[in-house]
Image 1: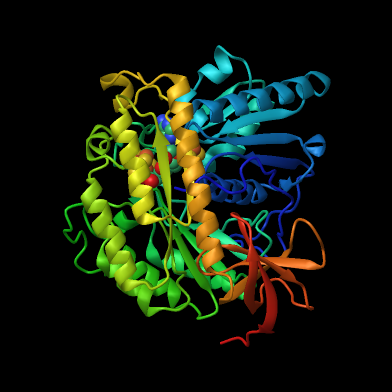
Image 2 (image 1 turned 135 degrees about the horizontal axis):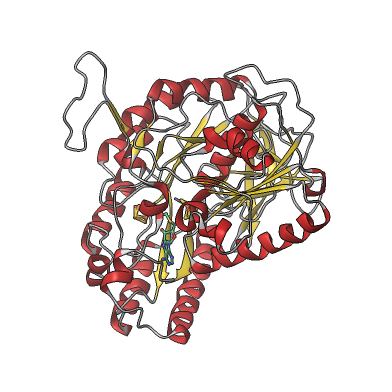
Length: 483
Ligand code: SAH
Ligand code: SF4
Ligand code: F3S
């Protein structure tokens, strides 16, 4: 799962007017909910489920924490610094509680699951702790706090997918939405805390996914991103060994699901994240090639360029296998942009192994990368099996080398786009000026151009004239008619 590009962004009031509710929204109970999200896109998507569950009990969302009766912080445990940031933020809310003792402060998500009751009992930071599979219980938990108890539910589930809940869309501008297609992860990469915080992998009923996408399209959305920790292992009515569970029902794999979503409308763009190199099959690439509205972009985290490190990481593929997957992408999907995640300084990483990561980057030439220093996480296989023995300064130096290389590759890729014409989905005004609008092309590059009267949600053709390593600048050509 890609870290959210909206990290640290405060979730706002939302657009209940445009949102789809599976149940009629309850009448306001006069109380306001403020949700703040950290971590990956999955957490941002979950916060929308939380807003929906709370709305059904009459809570209205607010973008102003000062107005809130209930504050919920949806947290991430992926690296130590992700937790440190949340702890600092909890300190702020603890102060607010001193002046407003009625305020309910709750912690959700991966840190809640990892630290469980200790956040209440030892650290006394919050009133309420709810793990990722316990959100239906939130209204009860808030009520329990009201009766003076400290409320906890961190039970993980084998089948909770929140399939029937229509998320209250919060802050994605009404154009692009995340749609969770599966939860949990069964992979056990040795560095990763996610299997412990999110539990077993389970897929969501494909019909509820397609219906959600249709409703989003009817509400004006023009892009969906299908989310899972490993979308390639999405399976409905199929066991992990590929056996049919219920002969009377159809089975669905990820390629088929993507096709079902692509058929919702040619004007609904489809993205997905995250693909796993060990599981990404050619049938997914074939479906991508077949539909123009499936974006030519794949996030394929490599983590390391050396087979021995990949083995210690328990990733399930070698350097050569990874290259073969890149070749397959290039064969099926012309001009596909590829991004990745890389970890520097994993346990026992030698200089030669680090050089292998740099040489892999040279060979693949990613358009974009998310790059991290290894951070040891409690309970993971790596913590139990290996020493976190690469000194901090070496991890840091290697990370800088990786980042420098990626920046030059990103700039090169963007320069390559100068002179090309791309179809952009307009997201709205750019950060710098109301007269300049921005949007992404299918390759996921952000493009900025003079507004020329266009509106968000429209598709426009833009000719690229200039770039930085992060953004493309272009000239508006024309607005595309709807299909
Ligand atoms: N499911 C996705 C990854 C989700 S976590 C996948 O398999 O690719 C997002 C990224 O955080 C990972 O790809 C990895 O690069 C990074 N990450 C995870 N655990 C980490 C750790 N302990 N230290 C540093 N980075 C880590
Ligand atoms: Fe973590 Fe690996 Fe699962 Fe990704 S696939 S969430 S890195 S265990
Ligand atoms: Fe996502 Fe962080 Fe949890 S990356 S799954 S919120 S540990």
